[in-house]
Length: 438
Image (cartoon, rainbow, N blue to C red; front, side):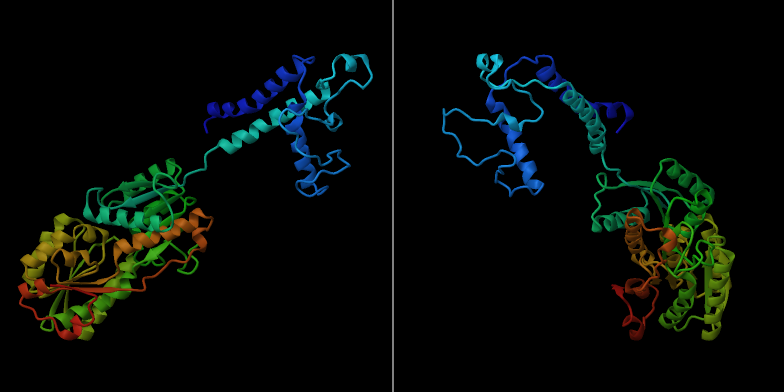
C-alpha cells in the first residue's frame, strides 16, 4: 500500500468517533428508546459467557440478566438499565423521572475520551489488515533468446515446476525472465538489472551465468539449474553444504565423458579416429582439464586416436569440421556447453554433411537428427529448480541446501540417422536405450 493510500485506512476509525460524537455529545438530551439497548445487553451477555461467568445462552443473577421469555409482538420491552455502566439515568422518583419515563442516555466525558482513543488506535490495525501480502518475485536468466526453442522449453519447464508447488504466476509469484547469448559481461548486466528490481531469488541456466551472478551479488539467493562441476568451478564449497548464496543442480559433466566415448565406440565398432569438439573457457580450467583427461583415458583404453578441436562461437564450427575431415576423423564427441546446446541444429547439420557419427550431451540434438546422446534432461533440471525456489521463499538458506546430482541419465538413439550413415546399431546398445527414434 502506498503512503498516500495508507491514510485512507484511518477513515473507519474516525467515522466511528464522529458518529459517537454526533449521537451522544452533540445532542446529549436526545432520548433513546429501550429497544436501542438490546444490542448492548446481548454483547454484555456474550462477554460474560466467554469470561466463564455463565454458559452460553444463560443469564446470571450477578449481571442482572435474568432469563425471561421473549416479549410478544406489541408487548412493552422491559430493560434493566442498571446494566449499562456507561450510561446515566435519573433516579426514580425525581422530577426528571416523572416527566420523562423513557431512559435517556447521556455519555459521560471520560467515556467519550475512551471512545476517541479506541477509534484512533483501531485505525493503524485496519491499515495493517488492508496491506496486501507481498508477492515474491523471481528472476530467471536463460540463453540464448526469448524466441529460441531451447529457452522456451526451459521457461515452460520452470513454470510447470512452480505450478506443481501451488504457485500461480501473476497472483502468488512473479517471474522476471531475461535472455542473453553466452557472454559473461552481458550476464552481469542482466543480473544487476534483476537485483535493482529487488527479486527474491535469481534462477540461472548455466555455470557461466552462476559465475556472473556471484560477481554481482552475494546476498540474493541464486539457484543454478545446470552446473557442470560447481565445486571445481568455484561456485560452492561442497555439494552437501554449498555455503554462500548459490545452490542448485549439477549435470555431472566430467564424470560422463568416458561413458559417452564408450557408448559411441560400441555403436560404431569400426571407428578408430575420434574428434573432440570443446568450447574453451565455458567452464573453469580445472573442469575442462578433467573432461579432456577423462576422454584421453577412455580413448586410450579403447584404442582410439584423438583429435582435439575448439570452437568459441558458431562462426568457428565450419573450420572445426573441415579440420576433422582433413584429419580423417570417423566419429565425434561434442562436449557439454550452453552455446553447443543452443546451436545444436547447426552442429547436427555439419555432422550429417560430413557423415560423422556423433554423440552429444543433450537429447535435443538427437531429436534434430543427431545419431545419439547420453546425459540428463536439461528442461527437467529447470523444473526441479522450482523446488529450490519454493524452499528459499519459505525461509531456507542456499548455503544449507545441498546441490542435487542427477539420478537418471538418458541414452537416446536415432535409428533413422544410423540408417543414413549405413550403420547398424548393435542390439546390446539398443537394449540400453531409454528412447529410440525410428
